[in-house]
Structures are given as structure tokens and as C-alpha cells.
Image (spheres, rainbow, N blue to C red):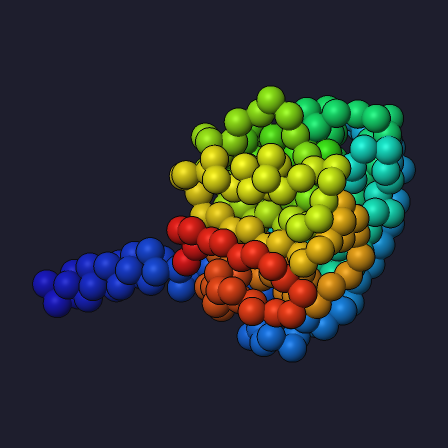
Length: 280
């Protein structure tokens, strides 16, 4: 009887721990503000070009070589008349914190957000599949259930569409997103929107702020760069890097060590607006 009670107590304790997030994936050392603002994280980064892109024009993969555990995958797509170079800084930044990252070129540079979404997801699925290919550097390094999307401009709009159409995605972080005639009120994926205050291509009032305000079912956040133009997120920034990494670690990995960094106002110089809801 005592043995049965012990087993029952152990099971209940385990369930409590699981419910509290104690068994979330923890990859890497405890984060600090300095470590998240730094240009690279704790892991070394490998890189290769996808030899046969399936459904998109080209892809570059960045991955941690010494994470010591299976990691999540993030697919990043650029904007209108742009190439993956416009979002490439995210590749090594995120990979060095324990993610496989693919940045892509689209089939044509004028592809619209819905097409960019389809290509983003095609790249995501192809990279996940590489985790099962014994000849790939990614073999046995990927957890295909932990995925995220990012993108800039029309790629940001495409990322929102990807998150809307594939709710199993764990996190999204569009930058200066542009999309038309699309509602994101049904989106459930945790979403961090980076916006640029003086953007005249995707004005915040009709794009980033509007998208944010539509969302009522998901953890969400918006961070706006003071006086930033449409290109304000195309190069590395310590605060943007901190927020992007922390958001992905919190919601793709479920790592609550990053909750404070993901959810709180960074109160950083050069940012004009911060909003958040349901982030914990």
C-alpha cells in the first residue's frame, strides 16, 4: 500500500512539474541581459547552403555545432525585391543560442506575402527533414515539433500568414510587416512584432499596430524603433537581438528562464513604443 502511495505521489509530482514548465527544454547557460545583447551566444555556428531547394529559390542554414541536444528550427524570409542578405544577421545570432535557422531567397523577388509564406514553410519542412538524413550536418540535431517563423516587410506579412495557417508553429517575430486584405484576429501563435516608427512603406498605423491590435488570442508584443524607416530591422541591434532570441527561447523551447527578457519592457534608448499582452 505504501509503495502504491509512493508511486501515486511521484506521478502527481511529475505532472505538477510538467504543468509548471519545469520539463521545458533548456539548452545553454542561464541567460543574462549582457549575454542576450551580445553579437553571439554560447554555441559555435556551422553554415551550409541547401543544395536542392524545394519550393523556393535558395536557402542558407545556420546551426549550432555543440548544443548537445535536439534544437528547434526557424525559417526566415525577406521582403519585396529583396534577398536573404536583408535578414541574414539573424541566422548566426539565433543559431548561436541553440536553433537551426534557414534564411531563404524567394522564387521571384516580387512574390507577395501569401507566396512568401508558402515558400517559408516549404523551407522549414525541408530543413526539418534534413534532421532525419544521415548524410546531413543536421542529422539527429532537430526537434521538428519546435518551429518558428520570422521575416521582414512582405516576408513579415508572410510570417504572420504562416503562423495563422499553421498554428502548430511555436513563435513568430515579423519585422516591419506588410500585408494587405488579411486579418490576423484568429492567430494563436505567440507573436512579437518589430516595427519602425517612420516607416512609409508599411506605416505602423495600418500595418504593425493594426496587426497587433487585431490579435486577441495569443501572447503578443510590439517593439517600435524610434524614427526608424522601413529598413530599421535589417542590421543587428542589441535590444532587438535580445528580444528576438528571448521570444524564440521562451516560446519555441518553452524555457521559462527567458520569460523576463521576453515579456518585459526593455526600456532601451531608441525605442518609441512597447506593448504586450498575455506574455508569461
